[in-house]
Length: 326
Image 1: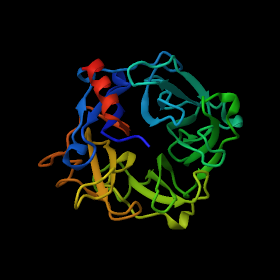
Image 2: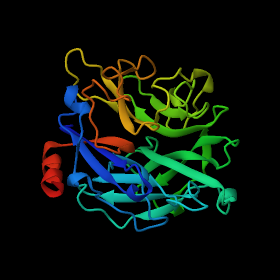
Image 3: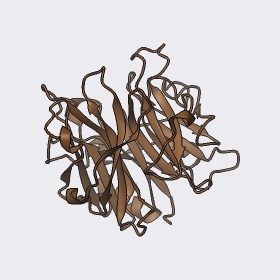
Image 4: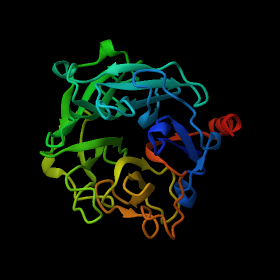
């Protein structure tokens, strides 16, 4: 198991011209330092996409059990009539978060939707599939559906091989149908209960500060492939008008420190927020007075941070990353 000396936050920027991969770091990952991130590369991108729509949105980063890091992102045009639409995801592998391979696209939309100009494919993530073991297969999941606001978007999933070859992709299926639009799925496995905990955004409501929804909920299963029982879906866990959750199990938390943390995008006010809890499925509270407000708190993220994810790195890895990008 990797010794977690620091966190790397992968994210994209706040305008169509900043749809690239940015990195920041927090050292150490626990305590007050774990909610204070410093930008790498002077706040400039570390990777620009040259594939597909040539944009990077909603980057998800995790350690590849076969070595290095695997990144998956949304692939959609930055503007124009097809903005928000698409049937692909983008993926890159990096040994060290300094150099990246050329990347490639994976078409993940169901076969009968691959020519549908109104289909959307948002916020992909992956987790190791324990069934074949040995890091040979991953569960890839994302938000999919029709762009029309009245159409439901669900969390979809499929299995894929360790190199993310499209030929190995299984037939996509709906992983979670809550009866309302759900997007931005994020999954962690708890060593404590052995379950897979799925966090997602409830898209009901409006983008107004008095809305009742537009925040993160939770449901769990014994397998990353489900089933997830909709009757067990939690109450809202984050402040309203938040999305893009990235749940994190704090390594060696200090005395009195909650063992679980969740980062999220406060998408209506240009800020980033953090909540913590003693339980993955309930009891989440904002760090500081209100980290989405960003006032009077110790929470600190680079300006313009949007929908990202965190991953642990070792002391040596961080030193190399900082030595190169700073």
